[in-house]
Length: 289
Image 1: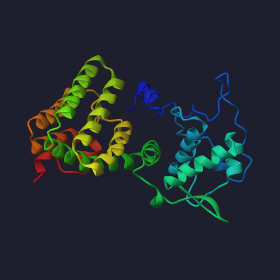
Image 2: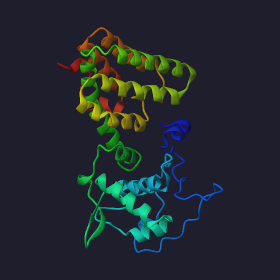
Image 3: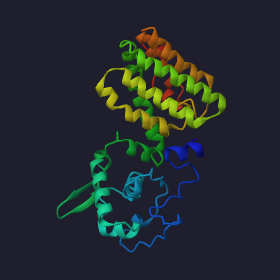
Image 4: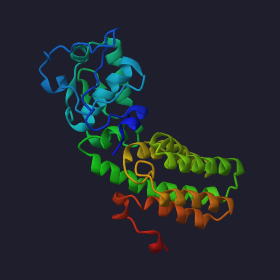
């Protein structure tokens, strides 16, 4: 489970805090009053149960978050019309903010805008499910179990290969930085500092994919980062600190330094298999051929 400290750091709302975010704030810092929804679509007027922080992106970013979460959660179902004027009135934002927010959601495949039809919510089959925002929204919505399982399976495909490739490239600079991340994680574990540990862990996995030397894999690094943020379980080795997870990270670094592709891949599989949602759907390391 995500700690309150980590939630504040990442901008992801922690359990029990999911209703505390609003769109507009008065200059004094007090919440702005929200007018009742007067339009025909009463569901659009409900404040999302999974509202998250704006991450400093202003009204535009907050509106993208709110509408995106409502679509992904099913509060706004497929083919639901989204009327800019009604959205602007409900959330007390300008038409420009609404228009730009809908463009962002359209780029993510969540909505479509057509002449004489207007803007409507698109079916799940059209969504860009690899978009980090959609990954986050799904992971904290009704589809959380499926999303976390799918992320675990996808990581099982991406990261062992990245570890194998990285061992064959001999990038000493990246290997040194990976070792540094393991040291930081170890110190953070000893101090009970989950935030620092999570940061170092995310950096470790990002560096590893970078070290693979495959631009297409590197393009997928955002998926791994999103998975680490939303996993909330032992896959990161930081939300529930343990020496075994730290040891697997260190084994990966050792295998890279030794130029041992098979060892690096096996160590990464050992790290990933501790995730309970992955363990039941993929073979353990000893079953690999």
